Image 1 (cartoon, rainbow, N blue to C red):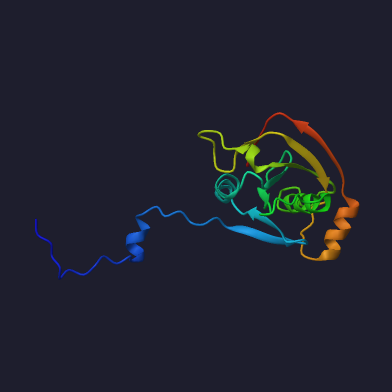
Image 2 (cartoon, rainbow, N blue to C red; image 1 turned 30 degrees about the vertical axis):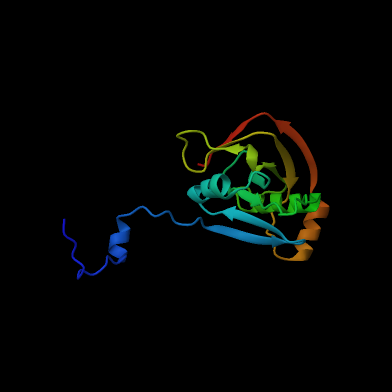
Length: 172
């Protein structure tokens, strides 16, 4: 076997890369909440899958508007294992409601659970997950960007209640 040492090395031309399946990084919206909390929101069904299944840490909090299409939302856990307060949980739920078909609604129910209880059914379409140990939080759909909006939403939002054994969230 002979090796041609004078040959130029392979270049990574865009045309050559098009034939390879290189996964794109997920496209997500990111919100910074008071206290150093980070919220990530998927843009598409595939981004939701990557966010919920690949990027999520078991201790992260996962949110999705209850009963209708919307983005998957993660409240990232802190490295020091600090638990988020109720106002941070409600702010993340409000972001989930805002990034859903219920955006123009009044008070919206949002499912909340730890990311460890979110699984992808085998062969399911992108954006479809099973969730367990959820609780329902009723919030107003509000984008969080200003502290006054966050403070107002935490005062107006109420009702953290309910549990269920297993739900399947599907996007249409």
